[in-house]
Length: 409
Image (cartoon, rainbow, N blue to C red; front, side, top):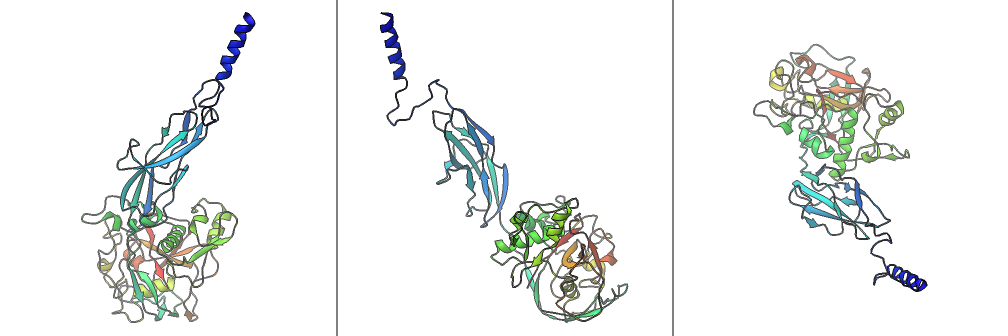
């Protein structure tokens, strides 16, 4: 009798291991239901540019009891992970943000699922803000001949010697310094020290971006070129593998003052891609030529457009101790604003003493670690804003008085 009852018990236990109709057990023999854990949430906030390749949202999850994970991303109209609309085809741990999103704020989250009867888990909400790329207004500068370093006007303090005769081909240059709105749209962040509290009646996004290094400027130029369908101007060895590339996403983290020497040396080895059509920093000669009004200026002016500093220059005597919205003072005869004052502007050239021989489309010395700054700033004396004045700094330096403008061939 005992043996018979033991047989019945074993037979009953065997029934517990019978497969479901599809051949897959609903749970393991111990009856444990798998548990999903979201290990890494998607980025809480992401800024992208309208129409540009925007990047990914990614989640990392784990599950117990050997179950298999699956994913479904949802969009929502509010910052909530309740409800939502399933995004077609978005069934992986990484989700490509659509490029056709309208300007504004969009919300996404992912539901992580698993086999074996696990309860699904929903991630936190990822906020995606789509920013419209503000246009960069470019001005054509006809080529010509001028005297580099020769003081002009009645408010100057003398030539920057030795003066040399320079012949330039025509080029485009941006009417204004790069603004905070433009930098944010391209780079996804605003590094500016003066990121709030504009002067009365001024627009925050139209203040010049500052607190940017020379390295920030060349990354911005290449990214804007790619977004605009132009051939990027700058190339350097990639951070991994060392192959020369014009893709700034492969250059690695932008170096700063404390970056290791091999990193800064690689970044300082950047060169201009022959035949490229994209945005770039003006050369020192291009910058001074444009500030003076080109080959046929409307007058001889110490500053960019006037002998009166207050008419064209934000300096330490009239700026109110901060940057000012671009385009608020008078332009020069070519239509350029803020070339004198507001922020110092990075140019392409390495720092070095001038030479006296005639030059054609010069690009500065071949060696050197400093990069040239032009134009003066809100915190400098008015005399520093003279069109011939020059300064320099390490390309990794950044502070609240340094910005840049762009050029194109």
